[in-house]
Length: 593
Image 1 (cartoon, rainbow, N blue to C red):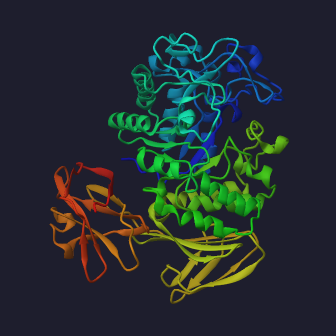
Image 2: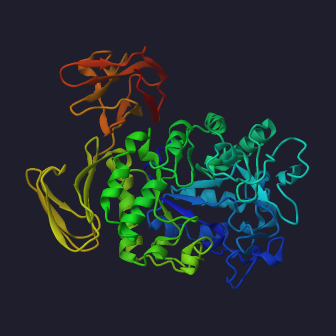
Image 3: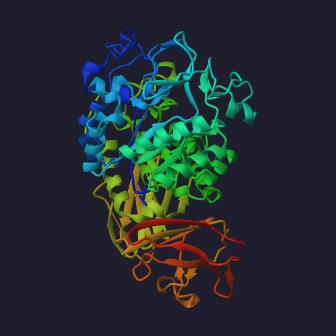
């Protein structure tokens, strides 16, 4: 199993990143490309070759995973939308999920990506994997293209027409018109979103096609999937989709875009807990914008309120966190303060979740036309400065994420929470990350419950030091200050290492959760030899356990709660699972009452 919580993601709108091959700019419809880059709805030239040419830039920033907008073959004509004559430069109007769009490749034959192994897409994956980087492919299962003069809802299988919205003999599409009532779940899931032709997930033909297509991309070497518009399809579809994808590719990490989802949207929490995939965390992003950009009076207390609701999720540490993205105004269009933006980025780099940096944020890229709304939140990448404060901070904190298990898997412990000051720590199996952020005027704080052992520690982001004595530390905080101190331990080692995670037991103060089982590594049912788990939040406990003698064998195990005086065992027979012969595995369970 691939552990994605150590990664730092960089999100690229391919057409707006870098023009690596000007020969592909015109595509099939010359009028859709604007070489002057004045028409914000036209192609501007970014392509896969451009990403390859900038891989060193990204790797040196500490980026370990790149999320790219969809590469599928797009319709070949423009659409009138929001006052623009818009080309499908963004990638979300696919017509053929088994070909690459001609604007992104080097040679015409590259579009038939599954007929060759020497396309520009193959080169991108090879170059990334040689650097130890992962590729995240953006996919769209909900819809194809919108109504245009050239047709509507046309779907192809490697160039062969399968279905169209207007002559839908195989029931590939819904035909209920646009969404009229956004509070009606049936309309949200079955009607057209913004004029886009909505696929009929009840159609076995469609389901087989889309799952087959995505598996082909994974076979090519794609490491993870970002799934668009997940709230617009029913939960059962995603459960089937994830089951089939993971049966074929167990290691793939999948996260979905439930727009504005997070702790503030209970339906999205239910999706994250039951779909089999993780989710982009809009609720935390909104709290970060309110705190740093809008100066809401609650400040860091709003962020902490969101974090305290992590117990509502089964895997809060796998939520994908962000500050900027392609659907909302960039931070600097809301508040043109580069120092505040740096603080926000630094914070998501060490908070729970997997941080995602939107392309150009490290270069303070933004355009404030129409308050920075789409499409003005998608400017062309202009600079590649490796000395900007955000670039430098991300490179340092990304390295720390890779080595420190507390940042990857640990819980969050709040030490000081004020509107302008937040001091917190992360802890997991001896790893510690201790951080302080101040968005106000300079002040000094004293922390009397510092988790670091006595000693002198150096700030990851500067040359400053702190001295911890008897868990107490005095910290002078500058204006717009961020300090990070860490204690990193070597990972547990074994022939097979299993990350156990338990959800569903709402623990109380003084309780611990342990794992016991019928193998030597779990104490052979002897409670005194069971393995104690780490507290992550009130709903989640976790621990990494090395296995040597029991590898490649079935074991039985269950969870036990202790408060020092009594034991509470799960009301179930022991779970039976097979330990792999080697490697790393993630086992997730829910408490059995």
